[in-house]
Image (tube, rainbow, N blue to C red; front, side):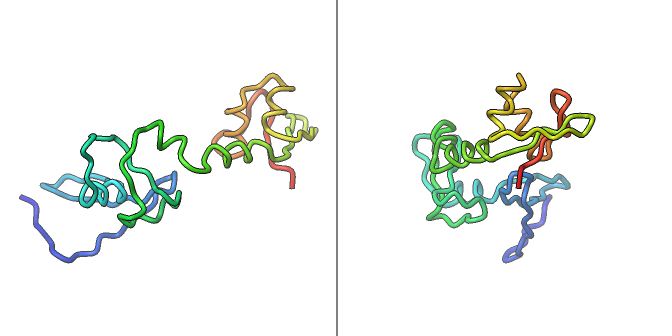
Length: 143
């Protein structure tokens, strides 16, 4: 049987996408849960049994109940400025660096992928540090 502790503050930590989580323990097992989902489940009605919780102000760290709403996956994906921010990130000038060290300037990751015949999402992953190389090139933002 787990112990119940009233009034204990539980330390939170961000996951790799910036959402805050906490560890909950029960019967010697641990479960990591998102704080925004805990708050929504405790304080927001969900009569349509919607699967996701949206941050209205788009701040993943703001888990106040008035900043949360239940929603569909499609609504959550298309909400707010996410699409515009992603498009803008793909329009920044970059360099493609060949294995021999030659640097090639492109006005955007989209243009680099198009002209080099590469996958745009893989180029984007290189720029975000998720991959080192794609198509024989490394990529870096032009400052």
